[in-house]
Image (cartoon, rainbow, N blue to C red; front, side, top):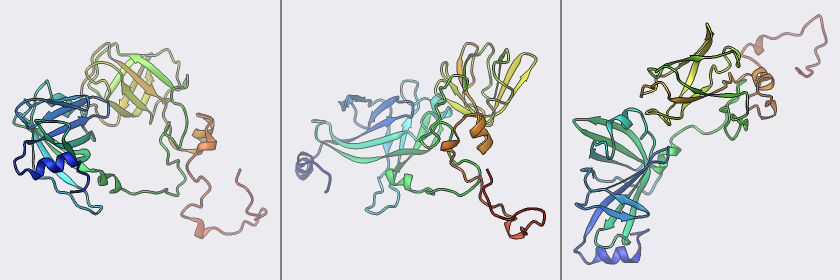
Length: 295
């Protein structure tokens, strides 16, 4: 029984155990939840694991190879724990999950049995049903660079290195009218050019939708009003007075990187690779065919 403490092994060896399960869920926004299938709350690692959620789990399937470990958890929806509103808003998507077997008589005697993330999360009938995926799930994706003309980095990430908090590249806005989560309107005196935020990002900073974000599809100025439209509707509507931040957009072209962001040194594309018609290219009769620089 590798990975088990001597105290845990000794407890199991007695044949009469006082074990229960405990789960810790950490969302991407830092909010943490603790649950247990014991009949009273437990406390360890600075967390309280509540017993009144009706959370239970199916058998954990684990392997020694690189196949994904999977299990499922089922619990009751409540405003004090996992609410239907938060699930609908996507706040639990990809949340980190840790699961222990705990001696409820001595919580220091426990075994971290599972660590992973929430995959598919369903709700219905006053309950939620979560698929838990192991750490090897992160390996189940393509890795490597793609040779293409557009930049492969995301604006502001570790490869791009551009600081999106640079003045002139973002705007903090207090909404004067509510929004359905798809289209946002506010007065604009023309501080930013039209389409400046197109392909950018909108982050909600306050209100019921705080922490949610979307990719900007369109940015236009109309009659002194700026209209921002997202590609996908936020799952929680916004009210007047809510604050949002919009960040300038990047279309991944070399010219945009150089002229708009002055960040060509970190451009992650290959703008000079031949196009698909290179096999049809022929020598030019009206100039030198030296193969010189395109810059």
